[in-house]
Image 1 (tube, rainbow, N blue to C red):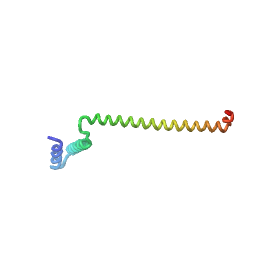
Image 2: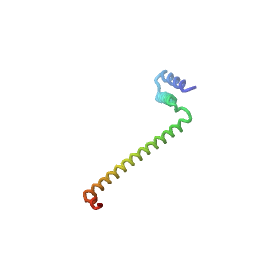
Image 3: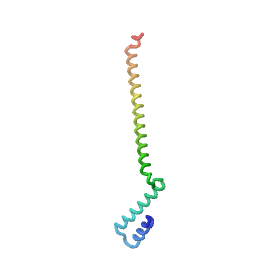
Image 4: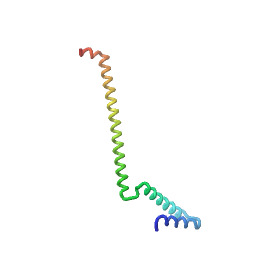
Length: 102
């Protein structure tokens, strides 16, 4: 018996009278399992290699996030260094140090 038949039988059983909580739970579980399998199949993730594919994608996304964080850190570091260099040059000009170099 496949999942479609199991779900159809559970729904038919639930329609025969006042269903109890266990029967309703079984119907919901079968329906959600069937829906999840269909959704994974539509996404192309129903085969055995899907777990490895998702793991690889997670690693790639993690590497991308690390690279992005490092790039922003480098940009901020260079901006701070340039700002400090401008402050030092400004102080040197204000104190007349360029005149001492002549």
